[in-house]
Length: 279
View: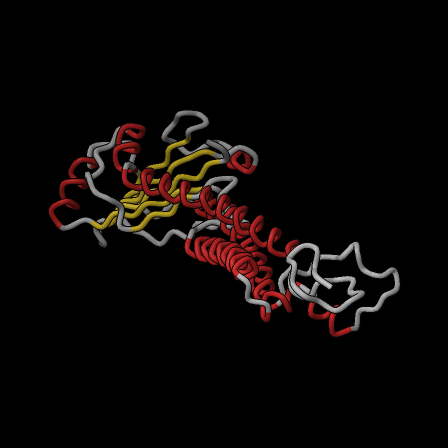
């Protein structure tokens, strides 16, 4: 008899065509097909053994989609590893890992549901990684403009330099169990250091080290700021718009927003700490 779909010669009474895999309505009501015929009718057998143009194209398309899902998963995992922060990068890495596992398994034994799940996880990971990439660019912009921003806010003449070290975090993007804060460090040459020292010499807002013991204990206990500097420091309380220490440090445990600027003239270094609750 002939298959009613692909018109190839097949055994009489077959329920499935071993070439195209279609169920045959014209077959006998009695199950006359053998176990070998049933095996030959599976998609895996057809993909590997019946190399018709249609089956080869279908197999190529399937593997192409699986490869795309695998690529999305790898990119999500890589971006999650390289971007700073905790929430977004961790989610991107999680979705990326799941996408990779599912995509690899589809190459070994094809399942359409696994392929769809792999693609969805990979795309979700890429989207979340996109938020991390966007945040990384914003962090860089904040770092590059830090000297201008703090010069204007604190009314001090910071050197027009890019920070040698920077750390930027936010409440949603910050690292695990870490307060949202910003830190910038500037390394000065001798001329720049002497010029900055002259600029702040007559500014009464600046204090000399060591830190006020109460302030030092407060920063160490609650904000994990271990400050080992010499020279001068400036404390700015944004909550009260004041350059003096608050009368009661406990108010910062619930609502904190302050800037600390340190100028260590022994190391020719300016360090800015900006600790905030929300911005």
